[in-house]
Image 1 (cartoon, rainbow, N blue to C red):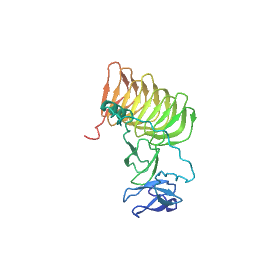
Image 2 (image 1 turned 120 degrees about the vertical axis):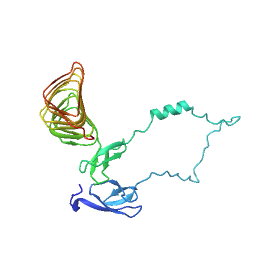
Image 3 (image 1 turned 90 degrees about the vertical axis):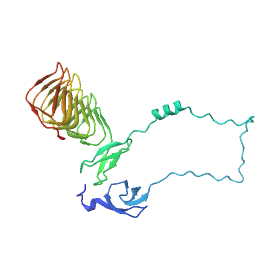
Image 4 (image 1 turned 45 degrees about the horizontal axis):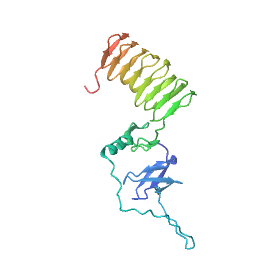
Length: 273
């Protein structure tokens, strides 16, 4: 996005401080890099963010005003204070979600965004980042690029595409490439044809997966049947029902009682050593 031609970018002037900056032509709102103020973009121009205001209607002189009956009370009684336990309970129920970490697809910069946001913009290169979540319950052949979460249900079939997301949960069929900034959780049977990159690989109990291309992850937890080449910068844990077949490159291999591994093991140095 940083090398995007100028005809795809527009110059905006901050309505608060007058700072000038370049933004993508399709931007609808952004943040000033000088004063950090937020403003909207309408017809290619920066405008202050709309703030809702309440106006009281004027009373017409000819309108009849009827006052509701006033209940007579002996003395004014203030509303009871909210008990501390109830107040704490409300805060626990309606507590605000912490901000999420978002990694830019263009420059790899990581920043934080509001948990409920549907999109974000990289503060370094101004690239647009989708935060939309996907739930796939039918055949799907369109590319997915989001930093939200993706779930492939049992009836979902994804083939011939690349999925770039945060967390990916596979309950159905996946035949494509995977690039996750979070966890890849597999709970189904099948072959994954493309390359796989994630923070943590989890193959749940009863799953049977064959990776036809190398898998790169920070760590892995396997409790099913896996065939393929797995490379981890951290630890690989084989639970008691796990059966792993193939070359393993890892900094640490934990094999619990009952687990099986068939193939070569190559121990590598962790990145912080």
